[in-house]
Length: 178
Image (tube, rainbow, N blue to C red; front, side, top):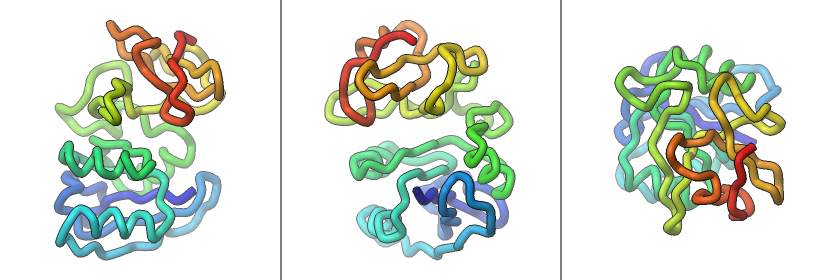
């Protein structure tokens, strides 16, 4: 699994839509410096082609426009938007499953309790694009989760929205409260 991080200087770029460089890292356990890729922003199609060409399955970025976000998600790339911080710290947090911590949330973006980002609307589904790690407890850091009864995937629960109103990002089965 490769992950891409939009960068500006040595930090996560505040706006992905205008970022000129990506840091691509391989695997969650592998240490080592990221490979830096320069992006040509002529169209979203070319940006998606760059991500697919480098086998990116996770994108970590700052703010991102809805159309570009949805186009990337439609290519089965998991997006973690509204992230801020020094590149090395963010990569380390992603590798260790701590990207949900408040210190990596852009000021003014997201909600309390570690949930950040906007809802992902894909093929008419309503679901949150911030996923709890596999094997997480029913309450991950004080945040409740919904679980897929078929494959076990967990996503953070959105207060006021029944888990059954969401579908699993992997197998599309209705979720249940963990």
